Image: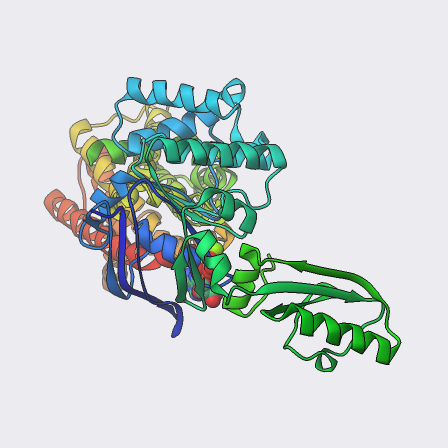
Length: 304
Length: 242
Ligand SMILES: Nc1ncnc2c1ncn2[C@@H]1O[C@H](COP(=O)(O)OP(=O)(O)O)[C@@H](O)[C@H]1O
Ligand SMILES: [Mg+2]
């Protein structure tokens, strides 16, 4: 049995397809990265898979439980860190944890033991009796993480769990994800951070405008764009994009060109500079990163 | 299922009982309204106390439940909550329970005031059952107010005030039903508050306009109507809250 199975799942809002006939599966014990630009449909996918909203069409199973017909059962085996979720600000960290534990039907004593050990692990045990409204953003997110883990879920959905966090909290969460992998838990990780995804995930799915573009391992994805190289060049002056051949990608004040013929490209860049009196401030040749793959496949920038 | 309802209600009690709108609309408004309408009028306490009870119960029971959903939408706590293995029904039932407890407990205050003024309750059992029935009915009505998927508590409070005041004015709180013209009785019978007031008068004065079973049936029908409608509307509104 796969941990997550999705078949032709769709969801529209006001006639606009947020998720369009998406199919994929996630193996047990895998950390699956789910990438896509803003508005691609990642959060909508997570919400459907966690039983928060219903798909318009298609089916999905989490640990074999149908998320529409068997929503409550599916919810019992999964944990989630939603993209925009807060703990109750007027309750203490401890009360928030116990609230979630009792909603999962965990006996009180057991809930207390798990709460104490999770809060210790995430470094907020000392603040367990303080109201959450006084917590920093990083502490709040760590608490949300503890709340997701208190039911000891088999499958964990993380929707951009480290976005906008301080370095320490982000590292703590990444470390935790690695530990989950060792415990053979399944993790569905949505992220904007390519490095994070490349470092943690065994496979990556890329979604764009509601459609699944590709699913593969990070290594395979890197070679997927034609075994090509990425050449990045920056001039001292702004250059009209049409002056460069090879369909360059604008990245900040540089241009990025994917090619299998680095020699030709570099020669013509140098030629262009000479002819137009431009100075090359920087010229980089590197094998494509996951980010390059992402940009290439989604045809857009990855701005957050 | 039932234990999860209680978990939700306990969360609501901790989070919302002391929120500004709840205190203002649940405790202060009925007090001021009562003072405004009764001071200086020479009415017997046995007539006043049922009216005070009705007003207190109505305002307190409808003060907690409308605040919860827009607050949770605004605080972004709802998605985390509904990802837990609970249904919208459990959530709604928990919210109603929290509101019910608040309404039923605070309505003891006017009874105490009545006792202090020398009013005795002739049928305490009927009164208690009437309070419980009505607290549930009004709490469900309160939840109905919060069905529009907004994150602004003030919008919901405006909507609920807009409905609550007419419901009070058309009811038999201020004028005894016996003194109303035929159309007045017809209009008053649209207000669920009329039936509680009638039951409270029966319990305290010993006589009422309607037979008490009519009052109970009316409260039951209104409760069922409010509850089913609230469930349906909230189930529909939930996906729009994220
Ligand atoms: N509740 C909603 N109502 C209307 N449109 C929505 C809603 N949720 C998401 N969308 C739209 O669906 C698309 C996908 O959004 P989302 O799943 O949040 O993307 P992502 O998480 O990848 O940034 C966007 O165009 C967004 O505007
Ligand atoms: Mg998102």
